[in-house]
Image (cartoon, rainbow, N blue to C red):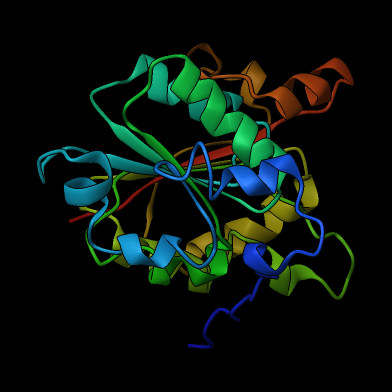
Length: 232
């Protein structure tokens, strides 16, 4: 199987004119907000060193936290689970973790890190549930290789997750969703739920509406949704 290509980021410490958000990664929030260089040091240690919880405590993962509303919501309303977020842009990254911390969350951490390099952050069996909400659809004909929900990354996430864990994927892009369904079919996951119109389905009641999701709904765009399970 062809491996997912690595993505190397510009280093935060070499930014010529770092914003106050970038500086927060090494300042006030450095204990829960990790740069691309510091984050891999937590591999295998998220429970014991970062969150200081028992091994049986679930540690969930959100890939692409965006403005961080779902990320902070999960941390504050489900305190019996920890959550790690991945985001590339400094401002939403800091806004998301700051919102969680100000709300009193002790179970949240965030990293500036690319999902294609996820095996550098976690060991096998270290992750529980995974959330992927509204990633870049990369609709240009030459860009599908950049899509996050691909068979290679799914295989990696499957190894990192504990048995019985789930993966939730939402997108406004029907094109990307139909493409992703073929990738999912080639993955080890079992499909639990699937719909081309989340908000007209039985799954809408338990759905948290993200910021971007609210914009798509306002414009009448249907939300594509699938939930997978990592079998034992």
